[in-house]
Length: 80
Image 1 (cartoon, helix red, strand yellow):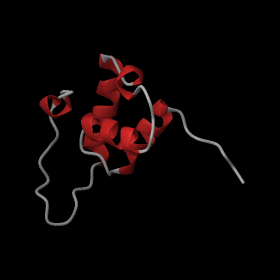
Image 2: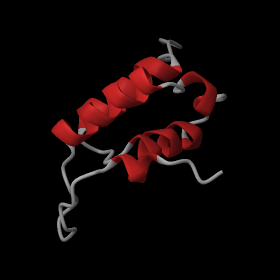
Image 3: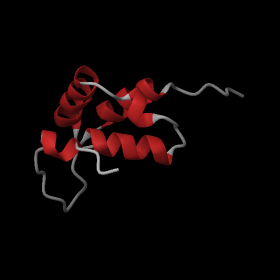
């Protein structure tokens, strides 16, 4: 049995490439739901969020029935 777990950053990039997350905020929420700690600290900085945002925009697949509204920088603001 493999107990290997991706780091927070590795998992963030995996989620961004998966097409499941529309914004960096979505990635942060998913990571927290998966039990990752210190998400905001680890995904901090313009380079990191910019790279993740770009991957989200390139790969996002809207769920059926949802409008495919492009993500914007405003969508990534933290509310907490």
